Length: 125
Image 1 (cartoon, one colour):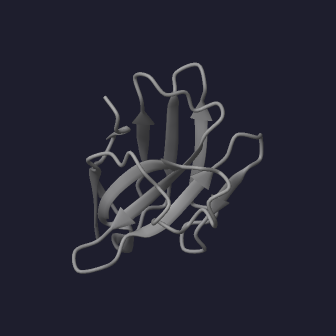
Image 2: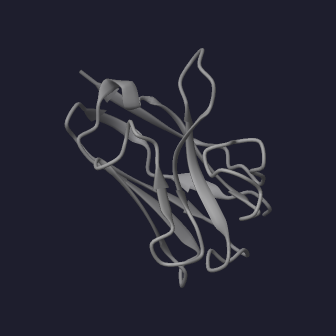
């Protein structure tokens, strides 16, 4: 397995919560920079949240700040995205991937690699 594997998506009503997981059977999260992205139909992939090796290295898009929390469990090689107060505009396919930590801003999708297949999040109004 080279790609990261996402899970945890589903259908939820507005105001609800979901927790997404991004795991790898071989790669460790300890020294990596990882990011969550989402893509809605007809729109470009956008950065949602990023996390780096050091404690406190977390980054968020303005649209999800306060509502979403990115975290990681190095023992489980898993990165999480806790999504609260979900809105219909949060609907999309959510992906995780990794990048070299020196390769530019966290929200730029270009430097990321080993993208997973994605997990669908649908928020109904």
